[in-house]
Image 1 (cartoon, rainbow, N blue to C red):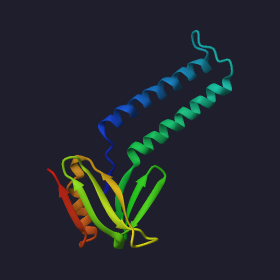
Image 2 (image 1 turned 180 degrees about the vertical axis):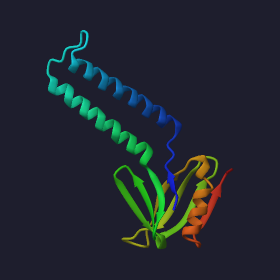
Image 3 (image 1 turned 45 degrees about the horizontal axis):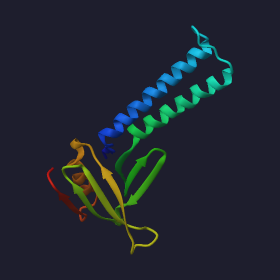
Length: 153
């Protein structure tokens, strides 16, 4: 089925853009020192190489975090992919989905697999285009789920 990407707030994208800019500047600066271009001289080349590798890995990890976080329905599970962590919620344990239509943020309530008397929840943050598609997909995934929407859509 379709993957629904996690929607970060706009302020988070601004912070991510600043982090990416600092990362790129750091990689360029370390590369210039390593190549000894102009007045830049590398005193300890190993630190410049290490900083380039670390900043590049950080850049890749940030990209995976921003663009790889998603929700999807696979088999009998709702799968939440967040960075390198996958959380699977069984179809039978899903109880209710409550969303704020205007904000695009919702809560999916489900029974704790270890103790079914406990109810847990996971926050679902969606882009505007997916705010109606996710509840529809959830209804197709589990027809008897309770879906409540508060506010405007």
